[in-house]
Length: 239
Image 1: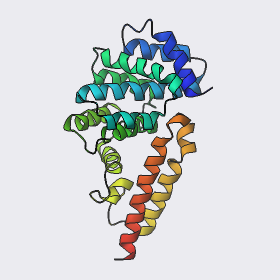
Image 2: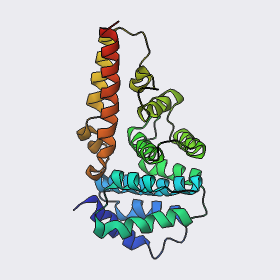
Image 3: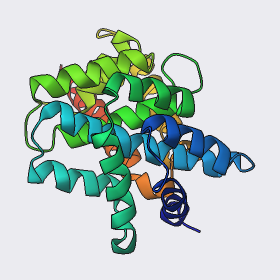
Image 4: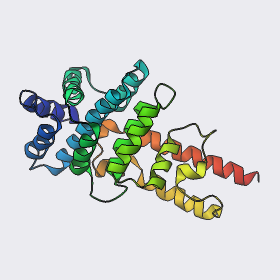
């Protein structure tokens, strides 16, 4: 059964009773999937992505067609489940609770409890993909994402690495994309690059809870890492 079938079943259960927004949704994820930790992780990730996307759109005040397309690039929602996703999106947008409350609850639901949690970074990457879709990062979106990263306990240096992955490398330091200091010996850069590629392989991300249906997050991250490494390699070769 796909994550969308699971999510559809879940949303059908909570739609009639989700009067308290995120509080009800989080509690429902915990109880409905209490006996299936793997499915709970995948549904929790999906709920967090949809809910925080809705909150980001509300904070921005304007939802462009490019952002809508980016949302569905990340989610690739089958037509028969579009109404389920829209229902959860609406619950989050209409909830009077602010985005910080949502981010805190989602961090507890999805996170490991440690700083720079990989699963929370996956969520942040998805939000960046949507925010930059119209060709620019609006100030309110940037503030939203930075505050979410603080709640997710993503440290500032790591956050700047995530930011760097989402911008044109013509304007971005490739060393920052890889999260390594400029001036390191090339052999150290190569070892660090290989470690990044291995740790961000789609199979590794799926193992920690990223649903297969959201693997676009992994492929875009690997593409940015590869591009940064190739830029460094070319620069050192011609130095």
